[in-house]
Image (cartoon, rainbow, N blue to C red):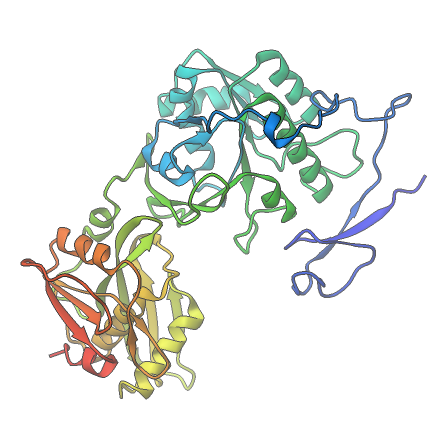
Length: 453
């Protein structure tokens, strides 16, 4: 019998009956892929025989359900607990995504040392052998005897091992290597990823096991596989950072039990990941003194203020088409700030090559970094340093006006704590004056550029 085919979007997971050039759900082009959809049912069985898929849930009223508050499990890493909202909730399904070599497996293997002291941990690997896991565990200092290892890719065998060992925490590395032999599609396909994720979801909700899933990302930075995978889990954590640099940022993209704006900062060392308790001080270490083209701003990552250094290099272009590059800042927003700087600030940056970079691998998404970006570009263009004790916070509009941002008081306190003496703010911002911090209020970028003297 010929297997039936389905088509799905690799960006959003939308399923289609036939191939199309554009996905009707997310409007992405050339993202439709083909996959078999036939399910092989064992002879004489009317349903799947995998463990954890039997029984029928009882219907209850809301009054009958007992709830004693959520139970959180500390992972032993304060930065990871912060991102999770105070620890992992018992019976939750957590997806940890990131590019290859970023440190996903290292992070999860490190927390096994602490987790196994309070319960059983089952680490399932479909990518490494037992000897490889043992070697990496010794390098990371993981020597607990209550941690169980399993090298398996069959979801049925994995669930059977979980039923036998009854772990409190299960780690699957990775979800793309798991497969159900009853499906005709190959491992890593949309059908296999959805089916295996559903099996882990059923295990976590029925048995109360906290499940961590490792997910790889594609070249666009999204977690490989169907987008529905992110909808199924309780928490989606993204590991960000350049593999060639030592800093790593763990960011919550989705969290049903906490904030989605919190981040955790780590440093990759030879002995594993080290928590960075003071990210602002660490990111500003080694900053050049009295150098043009650099300015510091303060961004909010959840409830944590972080100082970030923005560097800009502006030089006359040797070609008719100037080059533009932005790392750590949205490219389109950087181009908008360049246009505002030329039109409203009077600087002829349109004929210059412009390069922007945020030190430490941070991704600045909020508009509070606009003013610091404009000042860094102007400083690099005029070759005049702003001063090592100056920081800037504010949003820039298309008319060149400056607008206040939220939580300015907390940002100003963080700048003062790190030794900054001058803070440039929009006139609409309200900050209590301090003895150690001079507040400089400006109305538009023309007044802000007056600081370059």
